[in-house]
Image (cartoon, rainbow, N blue to C red; front, side, top):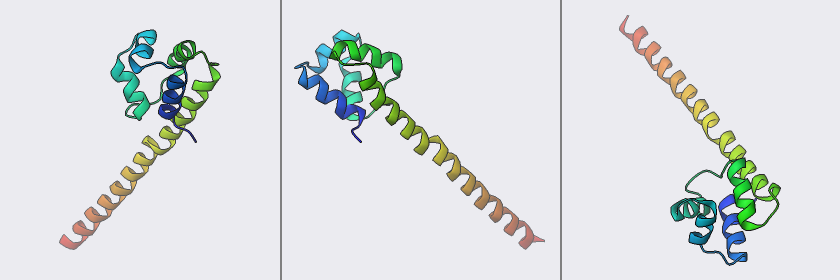
Length: 105
C-alpha cells in the first residue's frame, strides 16, 4: 500500500509543484506539506483532501481513499493496541501486588 506522503509527493512532482507552491495553494505552511510527505503527521481529513484535490487536479476520491486507509490503519494499530498493552501491564501489576500481599501475610 502506498502511503499518503508518498502519494502526495508523487502527485506534487508530477504537476511540477514545489512544496511552497502547493502550500500557498492550500493556505498552509511549507512545513505542513513536508510533514505530510514524510509521514511525521497523520494523513489529512476529508475536508483537507478536498482542498488537495483542487490543487493537484485529481478526483477527491483519490487522495481521500489513501488518507482514509492510512488513518484507519493507524487507528487499528494505535490506541487499541496501546489499550491492550495497558491492560496487560495492569494485570501484571495486579498479579505482583497480590503476590506481595500474600507473602506479607
